[in-house]
Length: 395
Image (cartoon, rainbow, N blue to C red; front, side, top):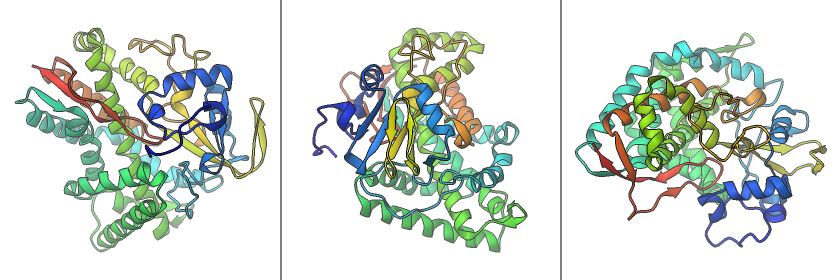
């Protein structure tokens, strides 16, 4: 990806794989929002990028002109591999999403808090004797992997394999078709085996739940179950570990916020919402299936759209002082979990994991900062979060 032609004009030739976008996209988005709110590129076989909240919202709600069947903008258009409900359009979307709602209610998620806390405390126990750590690799990236593995009923020992698939599908696979297809094939085979085992020996986990679920009176097809399990694994890991890592990255640089969160018990909820707004990890995609106009821009049939919830969350027309992180921000209707029918079904799970991860971390490490001798690196692609986060710890 580093050998890609450099971008000269972000408005007419943007590239979300460009190292400058990866390192710090916010100034790029701010410039586009003022000069060209909906950018276009001929890269990726044609793609658009909206920076204003209202335009992002309009696209997200418009299921007539924009399809969700391809949720990631890639160099090539691979064969459609359904992962309902995220790849589903109406009328199939509603029933597919309704299947998942009961297992992601606040009450259902509360049952996973003890396991999540145990995971966080165990990880902290390994880090505590040290004076430094990579908080992304050793902490943030471990929590959602273990929690979603527990919920699905798959071995936590397979975490390295899960991380490999996520990198191949969400990062490398954007530009490398062969890597993407191999990773998808491996995931399909992995869950096909787990589904077969649960059919023979049902357990109290999400695999067994989906096998026995009904939509409109019918059991789910094998492809539907497999696709949803792949979605839950990927979406349940990368988005949340990116959010946790970004929270720690911010707190490592802002002593006042760190100390307020430790001393003001009621502040954590609003702080998490503000971190989600300011560092929203997820940009989704839509495919233009019928030509239309939005915000003075004509969206051409067959082109893709980067539906940037992170850019929408930085729109000063909606969020005063949008470029500042205000952990007690009172009004905060951010779009970190999406807008429209595809709003994230796992938002309760993500919030719970972030809350426990930060609470446990701050309880054990009251003071910490970025290691000035090492480099923070960020993920490439449409899910943004630190992949290496070297910290110095002061117990």
